[in-house]
Image (cartoon, rainbow, N blue to C red; front, side, top):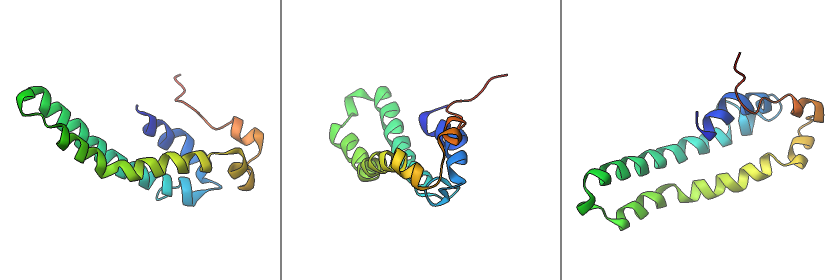
Amino acid sequence: MNHHGLEENYIFPALARKLPDKFGAHGHEKEQHKHIHTGLDSYDGYLHWARSHPDQYEGKKLRAIMDTFREVLYAHLDDEIKDLSAESLQKAGFTLDELRRVPMWPRHH
């Protein structure tokens, strides 16, 4: 599971109870993830293709793909720092005990 999968499956549901507009099913953070992953899929697809066609690889094309999700990626990194800050979580009403119980990774039984 990737970074965003862990967040969306384990961390966001716990945070969505008090911050649904940011971490809920249609919250801001999840919407950003969708846009980032669309860009990353194109990026990965082009690199996969380029491995089979190294003589046709174009750095400008890869850069153009990266530019399609650059703004949302940078905004996401900035927003996530603010949204997960102690101040933001405390303002939303989370207690330290509640935050300690937020699952940070899958538990294997």
